[in-house]
Image 1 (cartoon, helix red, strand yellow):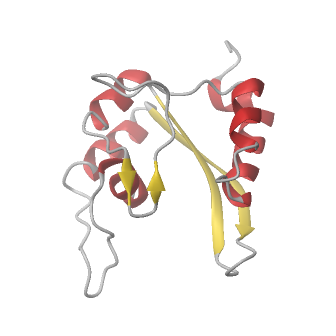
Image 2 (cartoon, rainbow, N blue to C red):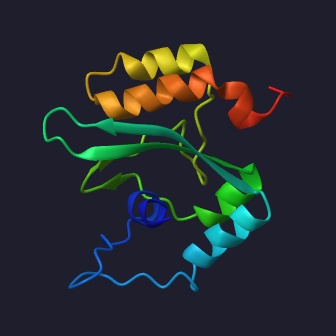
Image 3 (tube, rainbow, N blue to C red):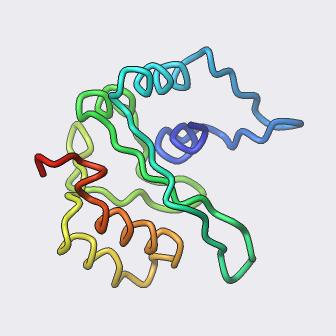
Length: 137
């Protein structure tokens, strides 16, 4: 949840001792909890990877939001943070997403800016697309 707030909404890094405190009873955390409780947000963990250049472990986690829930939670989404640029579809008054389809994933995977851990997660998400998005896809 902290990552959604930090990476998509531009909040400062919540580090605990000496850093920003996290109050899970206030938005956006309470909204994310509510969305999970109502199945408007589902989260899957595909395992763990290790960043080769610094040996930092990373959880390979995919989150799938109901479209209207995503739009409401991230209406003030930022385009850039100190960690990089958010990749999305065309931007207007709202952010449009990218389809989880083979062509889109292939285009993202050939980007020289895509590090191995997110590339692995994209590959796994595409491989398990039916699980993530349901059998109607």
